[in-house]
Amino acid sequence: MNNRHLTRALRTAAVAAGAAVVIGGAPPAQAETSGSAAVDAYMAAFPGGTKVSDNEIVWNGGEVRVVLAATAASCKAGYYCVWEHQYWRGRMGAWRASKANCKKFEFTSFWRDRVSSYWARGGCPVDNYFLKDKKKFQPDPFEPFVGKKAYVRFNDRYDYAARGYTD
Image (cartoon, rainbow, N blue to C red):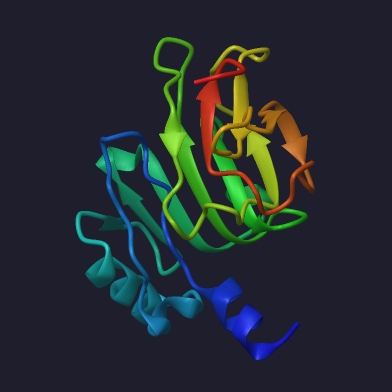
């Protein structure tokens, strides 16, 4: 992996939950690793978050979470979690979705085309929630967002999660 790709892979970002939280742009270089300074720099770049630990920030009362150095154990029950690397490693973005509130979640620019593994621990109907890749003038490639997968079918291609086959 060359330095440009490595640097790009180490950048952090958040997952935006519908219109409730809007977080975008490029995070500061200091936020490349976990630690208090990294979290503080990340929060300065993406205002409105609450520091939970030296490794985690939450938005919208905990509805959206970002863990800067995550493992599978970082995904709490009730959340849909995506990781930037296979086998539940690297940055993790997570959001809550229940059966009654199973809406579309657009990923920010960092997460678009970056999802490599996931764990679906939220409450959407099992047969009706999908990871999707936006394609203009074509059907969006999708994968059922169910269970726990160490690697996704369309690696580094998903742009959002939503109900149904089309949205």
